[in-house]
Amino acid sequence: MLIHIVCWKYRSDIDPNVRSEHRAKLQELAGTIPEVMSLQVGSDILHLDRSFDTGLVATFADRRGLDIYTDHPKHQEVVALGRSIAEQVVSVDFLND
Image (tube, rainbow, N blue to C red):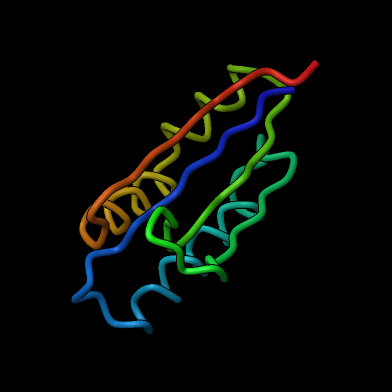
């Protein structure tokens, strides 16, 4: 199984409604892209200096599933939104046997 984790730190000028819209669009990907085995999206509750605002954890059967997800047009739409509102985005992908 492949685990995909992404975190967004939004720019300070981004309205809370836009942040919520981004999270909702991320969550919708679970029902849109069949290769997604599971997907969780949440907002940070600690608000530490090191914290990011939104996190996503998704699982895929393999690298092929992640690649299909990555290239999917609906995912690309959400990627564009995330990039337009984020100060920083970080990710990690790893195999979990």
